[in-house]
Image 1: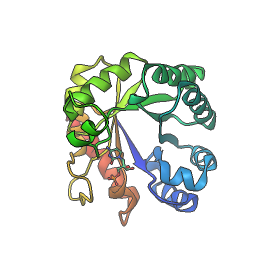
Image 2 (image 1 turned 120 degrees about the horizontal axis):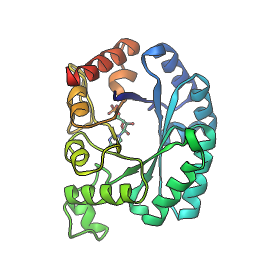
Image 3 (image 1 turned 90 degrees about the horizontal axis):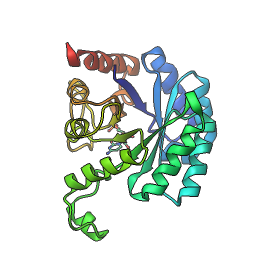
Image 4 (image 1 turned 135 degrees about the vertical axis):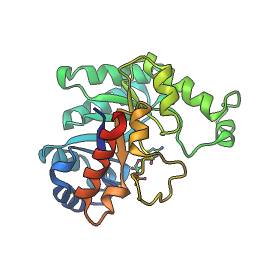
Length: 234
Ligand code: C5P
């Protein structure tokens, strides 16, 4: 069964804790990204874990293998359950991340690779010297590369998850943002998918921010998304 992850896109630990308490049992998994982590530091990860929730630490590590290895170890020690790295850091960096995660044994955090930031287009790829591939080709090539080198899964837009989940071996995690339940505002997301469609296409986790965090009743909004997800195979 696919899991809902709510993005704690807020600037303070106090706001994060307030939302988590409002949402209650409706959600068991939260994403902490650069904004909140940079404001509050590792204590915010410990606080969310202390509330009995799982944490997706989305800091997109990209550095020399030794540094990434040590950062993954630190994040694992904090209790992060999922974390992100950039696949463009290279094979040795991805393997270093996977090896550091494996040290945690049965409670090993899962390493997700970012293939290509969805904010980047053909022109951006040319600027960084990737002229031979379209964004779609780059995403698929980097997805294979990351998984071959030990990544447990990928961050994938709902537009790509169908093709990637067919192209890659089973068991790969697909964590998909850009999801909007029925009747909710699209915001600045350009291409969105409904929860059930993303799950049917192979998403194992959906990352949803504003439709829950900005809802009048965040718990009800989260429950409605979980119901939509359950409807994927009905
Ligand atoms: O509020 P919304 O549901 O759009 O939030 C989606 C979350 O997923 C945000 O934390 C955003 O940074 C993240 N994300 C995204 N698109 C990507 C990668 C991550 O929206 N390609």
